[in-house]
Figure (cartoon, rainbow, N blue to C red):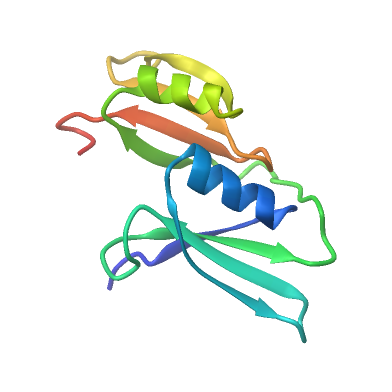
Length: 131
């Protein structure tokens, strides 16, 4: 078995696709509509689905906002230079919710970004522990 994707529900699909592709540099891999059940799925990622896990953005046509609850954590992405990555994200209109720096109680450099729906995305400096 292997991990295929993580699904998150989004309130504005076009805005979410723009964020994940333009701001975070992912590619829109595929998109499909189901008119009978009123939803659209979009899959985004850094490579082909056959090569690694991706994110499924689910847009239910009649829902514009979701309650994240308190169980969901975050999506984690590695970055060769989280300081430069945060500057690019900020310049593209992204929201940095935790500036880059060492994790509390450790030395790994991290930062957090919010997507248009408020989901947390952790940026982790590439290292031997996080290839």
